[in-house]
Image (spheres, rainbow, N blue to C red):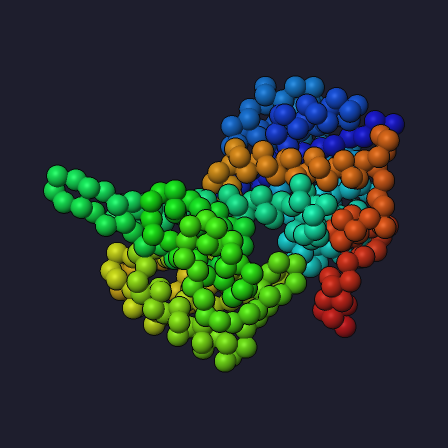
Length: 377
């Protein structure tokens, strides 16, 4: 029996990405997989319906979801979309597993096998499926360009007939995937760049990109490549040292996040007030509350001459390549899920098991199950 993969149009306001690009749709169709796409799904990423060959285009989202064996999405499904999903089907996408947990009770009730790409283990074998990393890299790149648009200065040094323009100084807070890409982008634009991370292991990576590492002599390695939360004493030490570097920067790009928890507050109001007028902060952690105390999600504010921008859904701003990379991540995941022309959910596989939240009418993910039971008790 032919597997049917369906892609509905994204309904989140401002979302420009699509879960399946024409090239990946073509590769799947060559494997005798039936592809159905809601009309207009790829338009904001530059892919009109005519770009999709050997793909059934439908105008009805409800009909699309009702016939899907596998549904591919970027954002979590709405309650209405969950109601429309075929009982027993497979859902793959960003499911935001740390909030709105009632969604998973609804998926469980419909016997949906729901895979959350955020939970794909960060192991070597899963690198080609790591959507968090592919999208974070885009966010880091774009954040620096957003900062350059807000900054009233050149990034590079320029020698002109009127005199020499000194290069801008950029501080990147957080040296994960987004932070490292931000460092590389700021360097390419000619800025003097510093990078900071509480993980000591990040020092070598920051310096390999030609930036100076801000060392506060705290080691805060956590699990999964993320940093652990700092103690109160460590946070005070962090603030004291970072304040000097923030004050000296023309641009600060902050990227620090801890999955399932509010973004750590790293940049205080006092630190902002120590910056020069005209300086810029771009806070990529705005969706989690922000690394800066003054950040307002999806707003640009001016505080004593300093511009603070908290953009949301930054990868969507680079919709063509963000969609391309995300679709490739999903394709590699599907190669693991589909074996010999059939869907095979191998619960012994570390990648499938780690990213599977609901399956067989049960919530399998221990953390989410525990939280839901806590809410209901």
